[in-house]
Length: 186
Image 1 (tube, rainbow, N blue to C red):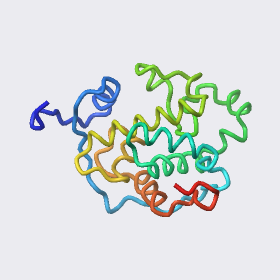
Image 2 (cartoon, helix red, strand yellow):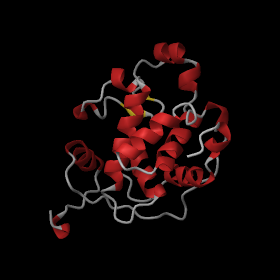
Image 3 (spheres, helix red, strand yellow):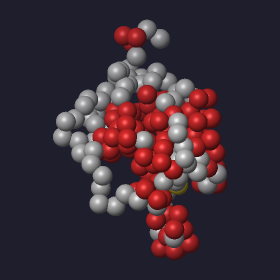
């Protein structure tokens, strides 16, 4: 498709449709100097699953031509903030049966069901990581001048039109690579 004819898509629903159908599009997003990249009150490094799934992350990132460190930064962000899922799964399932996302990539299975995602598939780390990296790949190819913060912001919220705090934090994690001390040196 001719570059000038690629549609600019900024609504969440249209972006989702483009990703699902894998159609050409441009997702506009701008930098935001007000986005906060600092560590939040609760970010438990001990709950990071990057080292645990290091091999799967590298394999999938290479397969889908995604920056390995970006995938690791997303998983670090999600598992150090969403760790309570792993510590109290039975309690949370009883208390919050409508939970819709599954770690390590924190993917909403009902949101992505049209692409073939199920809760059962996402409970398998291989599929969870692979699909999360596919999302990162499809987001990146739709952004002009993609940056870690821009890709992560749209990963967090498909309708993002400027870098959000999530994207800024992922970018900081990307550069500091806190998973290295845990044994994953990629």
